[in-house]
Each structure stands twice: as C-alpha cells, then as structure tokens.
Image (cartoon, rainbow, N blue to C red; front, side):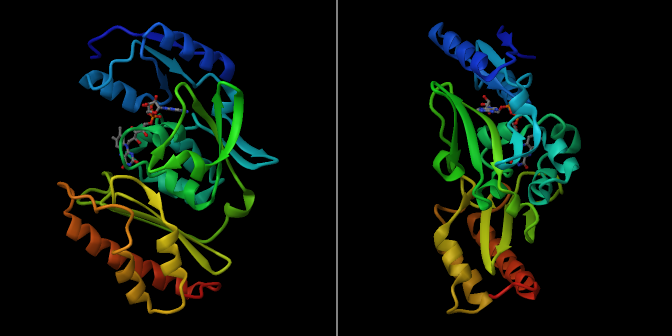
Length: 282
Ligand SMILES: Cc1cc2nc3c(=O)[nH]c(=O)nc-3n(C[C@H](O)[C@H](O)[C@H](O)COP(=O)(O)OP(=O)(O)OC[C@H]3O[C@@H](n4cnc5c(N)ncnc54)[C@H](O)[C@@H]3O)c2cc1C
C-alpha cells in the first residue's frame, strides 16, 4: 500500500504533460513522471519518494509509437520491454531487454523508465549507447533531438521537468552482428553481476557494460584497447580490467575482485567469438 495520497494525471500530448508538471512543481507537489510505474510504485510504497502527483506519459501517441520514420527506427519512451522484444525490429535491444526482470514485469516496464530509473543497472541503455542513438526530449522549448552521449553519462541528465519522448536508431545498426552476455550470481532473472553487449561494425568492436561499476557505460579507452593491433586477445582482456571508468561494484552479488575476474574471462570469450566472424579482425 502507498501510505500517502497523490494526484494522477494522464495527459494526451507532450505539451500538456510538460505544462502539468510545471504547474504541479510550482504548487510544491513534487511531481514524478510515470511510465510503467514499477519503480515509482515500489519506491512510493517504501517511502523513499513521496510524489504528491504523478504524470502518466502512456496516453501520448509519440511516447507509445514504435515503427520506422526518416530518422530510422523510432521507439517511444513508453514502449514496453516485452513489445520491443516481440517486435524483433532491433534484435540487440530485444535480447538485452528480455533479460531484465521477468516476463510479467517486462509487460509493464518501459524503455524510458529503465533508462531514467534510479536502479543503477539500466541495461536497456547499452544497445542505445553502442548505436549512438538520438534521444528526443520535451522541455521548455518543445521537442529537441540530442545524441545519447549528450544526455546520458552514467545516468540520464535532464533539465527539471524535461522528459524523454522517444529514441531514434539509425537503420544501419539494426542488423549488425552482436553478442550479449548477462552473468548473474544464481538465478537467470536477477540483477547483473556483469552484462556486456558488443557489436562488430566495419571490423571494429564496440562494447558497453552494466553491473560492473555503479553505472552502465561505454568507454572509448576500452574500445581503443579492444581494437588496437598491438596485443593478443588475452592481453586485451587483461588490460581492460585496469581501464574501467570507476571502481568495480562490491556487493552481495559479487566482490570487486570476482567481477574483474568475470570481466576478463567474458571479454576473452567474446573477442574469440568475434574473431571467428567473417569481418572480425582482432
Ligand atoms: C522484478 C524486477 C527486476 C528487475 N531487474 C532489473 C535488471 O535486471 N536490470 C535492470 O536494468 N533493471 C531491472 N529492474 C529495474 C526496472 O528496470 C526499473 O524498475 C524499471 O526500469 C522502471 O521502469 P518503469 O517503466 O516501470 O518506470 P517508472 O517506475 O514509471 O519510472 C522510473 C523513473 O523514471 C522516470 N521516468 C519514466 N519515464 C520517463 C521519461 N519518459 N522521461 C523522463 N523520466 C521518466 C520516472 O519519473 C521515475 O523516476 C527490475 C525491476 C523489477 C520490478
């Protein structure tokens, strides 16, 4: 049970949603955007957030559309993880989101909610980072389109009241060869000890990680090492364990040392697999 009263709004347009949010903020209602609600409800129940109002984005057509446009594949921020996986339009993203939570929850968790959520893993962002997708945001000046690297660095960085409306992925990325590995402590459905998503484009590898540090990331330093000509696969796998952008997570799922060990072995196997692919030059 949620122990406090709150107002519920379900606007039909992006403009209306932003306007309602601003009005509620001015009234000190501490509003929260609401998509799948899995995190908003859990955190409200636990008392860790106390929104006086929620603004549900799911009646906004742009936020629920998935299909092709001039910019490529458009995925609305409120499209659910199960809809993405079942559509098979973007297999790399479909595979990544199929390993988040269980099927019942995948039917309500949304892409935007996972990317914007406070739970640190945000695994759905990995394919979006690897494919340099564009993110559409609605804010004070209407809708704007930004490269994901400008709005996601460790976590999403939005101005107050701004929200994600949709993601655009260039068609050229939809069918690239990729590898997805999710390692958990025990069960298949669990937070990641390590999730690694990698793709091969023009002979070069791109790789992004979740579960390793306190945030999901893609690193140009690591990719330089992976694509550099001057050492063996085994040396590359060892070297990148010293190139992480922050300390390895150390929690009940696994110690920092164990995570580094899993990283090294996983990267080694992934590089070997890529080497066997027709365009792999590692
Ligand atoms: C059983 C279970 C297992 C899970 N396992 C994993 C896992 O293994 N890996 C993983 O990555 N995650 C996992 N999660 C976390 C889950 O992915 C998040 O709870 C979920 O992503 C939240 O999505 P939602 O659509 O329900 O968002 P909501 O709860 O609606 O919103 C989450 C946050 O994002 C904000 N928000 C939502 N949409 C937007 C938008 N369009 N623009 C701006 N802000 C927005 C909300 O205001 C809120 O702060 C798990 C969750 C559950 C319930």
